[in-house]
Length: 170
Image (tube, rainbow, N blue to C red; front, side, top):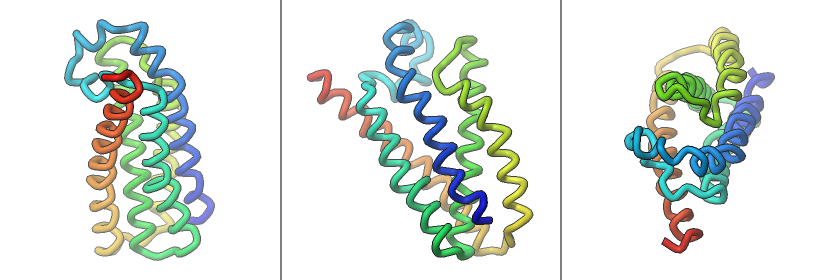
């Protein structure tokens, strides 16, 4: 199990670096996306690269890096379950990014790393599932982690928005 645990923050960073590097360029060069898909782009209005980087860093420290390091050094059912929930959530996140690109019929920064990381995430899910015992504690831990990650991602978008407003003087 330990062979896989610290891969999760690396995969997360690899994927999110594409977003940090490319989202600013994408939104500056495709303003029509905000008009045509307001529900998809609402979280990215007043986006800044710095705001995105802060959101990625917060998620890394709190979830991906922090929880992975805890699970690595203090292995137990709760942390393994939470780690598995994060891996599952991130793997679904890759599917969502690919789906968005298909839906809007346009490359969006996150597509390349999503295509690369999706099979890795699936393979890790399968391999680690074979190494874990899915008892009630582990399943509850994984099930609680997924909505916690989603809530934290929403908070990250709010933080990105506020930082973007401050930087742009809005």
